[in-house]
Length: 132
Image (cartoon, rainbow, N blue to C red):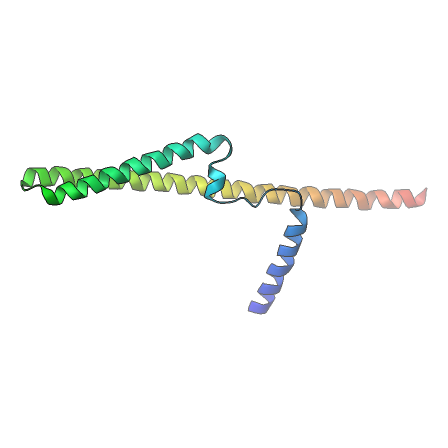
């Protein structure tokens, strides 16, 4: 069963490479997030992540340096809030990455459908040319 799956993947990959000639649809990933209309959103996310991680590290260091219980609670609360905020930023970023990957797959599918339609139109036109 695995051999059949591997043969199908190889055949589909060959067909995919043929369809993608001249099209730049394989740029999936984080680098694609820094291109296009979402560039500023991505830069803002990375900046917020850097600031949040910095505040988390400062909170953790200060938690172990202070001696009063009230200050420990304050620094632990700051660390927890920053941790939650960082997690929300990461989930948002990953959701946007998935959205871009999905859009790329939809573009591939549209390209395949357009190619199939043009092939079908060419096949329909050929018998008319042969009749004449």
